Amino acid sequence: MKVFKFGGASVKDAAAVRNVAEIISLFKGDKIGVVVSAMGKTTNALELIVDALYNRKKSNFDELVAERKDFHIEIISELFTNKNHSIFSEITTEFEQLSNMYNARIPDNYNYEYDQIVSLGEVISTKIVSAYLNECNIPSAWADARLLIRTNNKYREGEVDWNKTEGLFKENFLPEFENCDVQVVQGFIGHTSEGLTTTLGREGSDYTAGIMAFCCDAESVTIWKDVPGMLNADPKWFDNTIKLNSISFHEAIELSYYGASVIHPKTLKPLQNKNIPLYVKSFIEPHASGTVIQSSTSEDHLIPSFIFKMNQVLFSFTPKDFSFIVEKNLSDIFSRLATADAKINLMQNSALNFSILLDEEKVNIEEIQNLFEDTYKVRYNQGLELVTVRHYDQETLDRVTTDKDIILQQKTRETARLIVKQK
Ligand code: ASP
Image 1 (tube, rainbow, N blue to C red):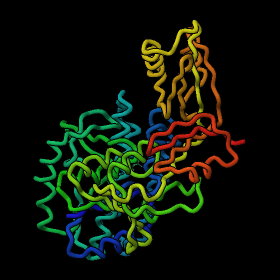
Image 2 (spheres, rainbow, N blue to C red):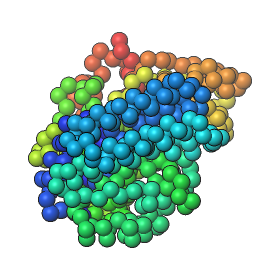
Image 3 (spheres, rainbow, N blue to C red):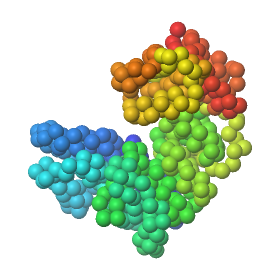
Image 4 (tube, helix red, strand yellow):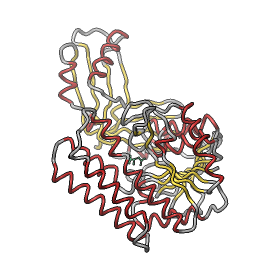
């Protein structure tokens, strides 16, 4: 059995859904578990709907629900010529229920309610895709991730109960392949032991594909994207990017740790554990080779990869009493940073200084100053970039530092990390 994952962009309109059906039809005879995300930007729109609900903004809520409904109805109107097809009433019912939630009692637990509403994006998209595949004579069944993926009740960030989930896939999912070759499942969602819907965190559909593959002992996972595969840098920041043909799980995990928006490490780990290869392929050119992520490290060193983080702020803390930076101050500094929920991108210490680099948009500079100023002199430098180069050489470092001042650098044998500022 194979696992395919189609993200929001690959089902963003009717033409995209047709393309998904064409890709699946290329694999006639294979058993495929198809994981699908919400269509286009639906998850963002549903987040706004939750906010409108909690802020008691009725007209805003109604407007947003109507807009999402129209978006989906337009897609199915293009896909299904038979206007009596049951998909029209199914989708209408989903939106009616969403609409009625405004007048129901609103739970105190925002995250719980978020999951009940935001998960609808995937429920709706999979109903449409599954019905459309059948329309194209690709016999497919709609499977409910809320009966397969068991999580704890940490809403918006559900943690998977692997034993239970594996059992549910073996009992309720795999046997269905006796009746059809394709099963369509929602990405991003799961359920608690009480049967309440949870989500796995934003961008969680890749993770669903990893979970499904692990639990079903799949032969491979393919993530279909609007890029030819994994590139050695984000084309937004870099000219002449190169596609990586093959990299190891280890390398892919390192790249995503440093901030490459490739595949979430959570997705990679279960696949690595069972040695299931992950293909990243283009849904525009499905015959092209794409990238394979697998256990062999033999090609990892061939091409340097670049990861850019823009809008960084570097803080330096110096103890006011001129004491040295030793373990005691470090634990004090970390506990203060934990209070501010700071996510550190890089850190460095010297005898009298401890420096950390943070995303400017995720940090409240004043809050950090207030948290530290009783004991430390705080300085900060804004407008910086963090560049990470895996498998670097001097030429690659020169390339990323042209016209830039180097503020700080760290190097290991494999990885160079540079904080730079435009001259
Ligand atoms: N629809 C969810 C999101 O946009 C999950 C996903 O697409 O991966 O975050």
